[in-house]
Image 1: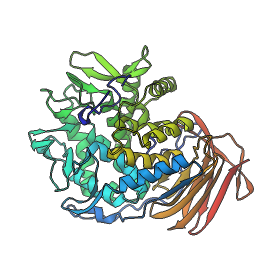
Image 2: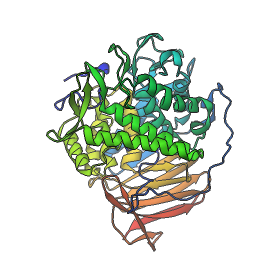
Image 3: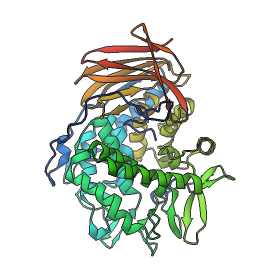
Length: 507
């Protein structure tokens, strides 16, 4: 079936029809369920910030795109296409500043949902500065006149795209977008270390208005969940599913709202506002408990997608819950994953999420298959920007298992090569103001080189229960933790100085 841009949903259309960069693998859980990360000195309490209104995008510097090589020629060809295609969509020097396409092809614009999803791949390609300019435009667009919405889509002329905006009383807006953007900004901080995402007044104003005024304005039932506009107009759709009729709210609204609360709670903790941070995490937990307990369909092995005005739940959601790590019931998560793998993605927008989902839960073979599908020459609508940008992101965060954590100036690796892939490497990868090279030989042998930058802490992880790992040939006692999907990992923390390489192996 053919699905147009306005019908890109959340996986809820028909069954016939995220590890993102920035910490999802690094923050593994110990046996007590606590998250852990390499230790470093605390963040400065009063970092310098750019004055409100000044273009903050200048703070993030451009970098060279990372290079990928592998024994798997199909993987190598896929990355070459994806990186070249994504870079061909970058535009510099327009009225809006530097930007890349993140909307329908040839629209000369970027929208909130697509931008939030494409920034991870953009970071791999050295475009963190461009992403920051785009995100800055969105956060600066929030307005009381638009009921604390921003502009859904912005074009190269630095204006709300006319196709989606007529006036402040008549414009297109999907309500998950604000919270999706908060989650995106948190991931950008973890990858880049840019404290403007935590401290700059424009970003803080957007976060604060979103978790307070925005929710109050659009929560028409008093349960803390945002609802579609009363007249069912385009000005306030409580879902990324743009085809549902009589919609009250949707499961993706709940999941993304919770993810935004979690992200802002983490930011508040870094700013020393621990009581408010706890409140954000508690609200996220409340929403996720509701999602797991009241939105699961036992008969269909999936979550419901939508709550209608008559109080009934309908449609199928098996995908955003997995992408955002919303399932706290392992049985539900496994069944949702089985449902996802049993039904091909009906469009490239769906498919662009599938590799990340598979790798997030340790399904390397399935992740490999989905990545090859996403980069295949015969893929319909392969020119859609999300395809190339998100493929690049999945190569690094998924296949190579690389994540960064600015809180500890650290990087983690966890190889997820398929059985057909003997080796893979990513070179000149920019993160945390540094450049690194990572090489995997199978799933039990990793070498990391700190090419340039300040000293770095490396957590070398493997999906195995191993009492010792070899560090440059010497046996070292390991520590263990758990990744999502209840996968037990063994790891070593290795400090690196500029120019230094280290190799960690199983056995």
